[in-house]
Length: 226
Image 1: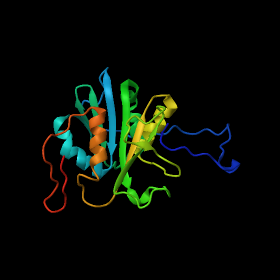
Image 2: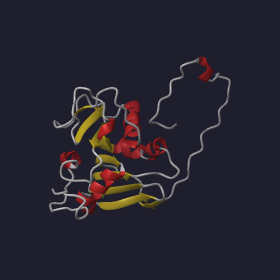
Image 3: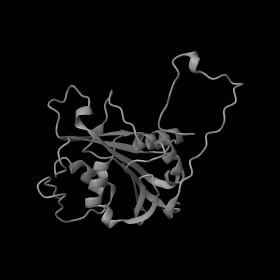
Image 4: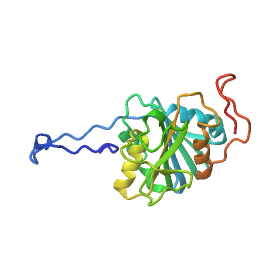
């Protein structure tokens, strides 16, 4: 079964009779480099998706972590520092997000804390009470009762989230596992200390050790500093 999308038929035309036999969905064969199996004790499991956030993670975080495993050809990598694990996801050639969630079922079951972080364009954020829109803001969806960090608010309707983060949260809701999904809304300007601040804050609050040095992406196109 794939998770991350729920379709409710609006008419009986979409309801399949009980006596109709359906073939079982075939699992896509995947190949790993490294050790993809989770250890017995996972204190923290964080999923990070979108190219912009992965670019930031490469600058401020990933060099402090060890590459534990890589899903070949599917844009999925697992990094760790002791019992802290971070999964980056850029884009899969053959797998849908629900299938990737299924691959990480054992990881999710063993993790004490689970977070997902994704990004979206600030122009897609919907809230008539906020005008003009800021350069960046962060919102959260959680089944943990309240938002874990005080600099973030709950995501308001009618904003929708799709992708791996939404799939992880949907699966955790189904399994009654606590999880929080953060979406960072950013403008389309080059990454700098303003539009990257929430990602930096999130990674720090989650317990990761960040690079303590001046960071630049490219001369003349960014003023990222931490």
